[in-house]
Amino acid sequence: MTTPKKTYHDYVIKDGKFIGKFEDMYRHFEDPWMQSQQPNRYSRQVAIMNMKRYGIRSVVEYGCGLGYYADWIHRETGIVCQSIDISKTAIKKAKAKFPHLDFHVGNIRDMGSLKNKAHIDCILLADITWMILQDLDYVNTELLKHFRGKYLINNFVTYKGTQKYGLDFFTTTQEYIDYMPFKLIGYAEGTTIDDHNIDSTTIFKIEPKQV
Ligand SMILES: C[S@@+](CC[C@H](N)C(=O)[O-])C[C@H]1O[C@@H](n2cnc3c(N)ncnc32)[C@H](O)[C@@H]1O
Image 1: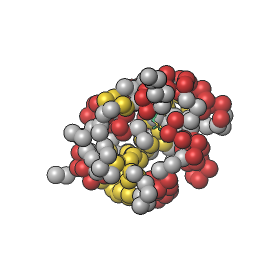
Image 2: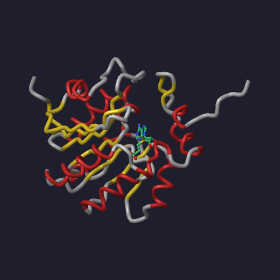
Image 3: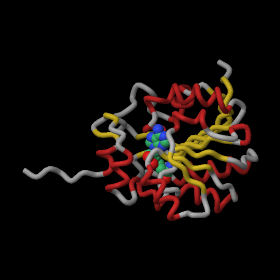
Image 4: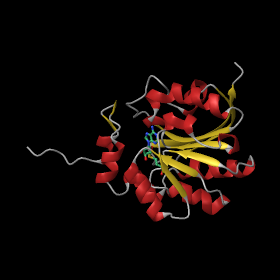
């Protein structure tokens, strides 16, 4: 019997279990999540609209991967995000593709060590939520500690009845909003009949929400 060929998912979340071998994955796969095509366009576009609407000019982006969204944001707003990813291979490739942008290796857990925190308007997470789920409470505590009063924009997808991982956290955008401890400013969702997921963006003010 032949073993089925590995896909990039095998390095991330497999059979409902978190694997998290991002560096290995980027060494083996050129374009995981079809990043070069930037799927999940509803959330990405609305998040850019929100950056313009709320006067956001300086952005730290965690989980930037190969840098395509940072480039899209730059083309539409002129913002050069400080874009950070845990994989050094991803960052090397992003730097080669988009030399006019700003990429660094780093872990979202270490946001406290960022320089010039006072000058940052917004923390952006684009399709990294499921990958940092076990750290989410810690990340939220750090956000409040270091970026109180700033914006948090999060783009991520939920699944139409096929979710296997993180069921004890949230399964819909509304459950995610309820889970988060920050003041909601706005959200949007988009999907098509053919899509197996629902693409969402949320924007929060990083301050405790009133309950
Ligand atoms: C689904 S990809 C999204 C890439 C890019 N944001 C996009 O949407 O095109 C998630 C990215 O998060 C990165 N990542 C995972 N855990 C991380 C962490 N703790 N800190 C920083 N980046 C992380 C992975 O290496 C991967 O590149």
